[in-house]
Length: 273
Image (cartoon, rainbow, N blue to C red):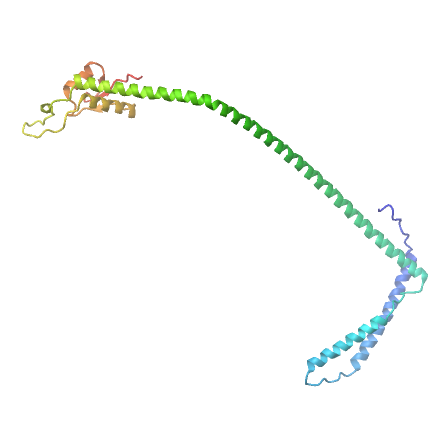
């Protein structure tokens, strides 16, 4: 667009003459305005009636505006100057100004187009990224769906294996219960609880019995719990509730061991290690 506008020649001499002539005309018009203002100052203002002064001022202002409106309606455009060289110079100047403004508009439009092109490229790139993301999510969904179907197909086989394992666990629980029952019967038969007359007595025969003697299953339970709960300190102190024959039986057969430094403490042999 800028190339289609030809450079308008600038006649500096004519432009200077035109500028000087317009200044002279402006000074003449300014002198006439000052003369009119001086005449208006000389005129004495007529006093307004005291009653309804605000309404009278409004009416006078309306009449002044109406008169000014009529004057502007009758006025015709005046030519600044009849000098053809002056008019030619002013016209060239105005055209040059219009040309410069249009070139500025063209530059701004080109910059705007470039910015819009960059925005369009970014939007297209974002669109491609979102499209790839959607494709990836779609593939992931399909793969997950296939895996779910495979797991569903294998679930029937897994259910059968689970039922078999559950059956084995129940069988083990029944077997454990049978062993514990048999052990309890064996201990009751061969290692009965101490008799009432075998309770631990005080040093003085007149004193009441201090504690009840523990049975062999109770002693074994204490030793096992101590070993499992505190394996770093498995020793149990011996008190009067431990019946000496059962204590000697456990020590003699290697089921229990005394502390190497304190014979009043025993522990269960670690058969599980």
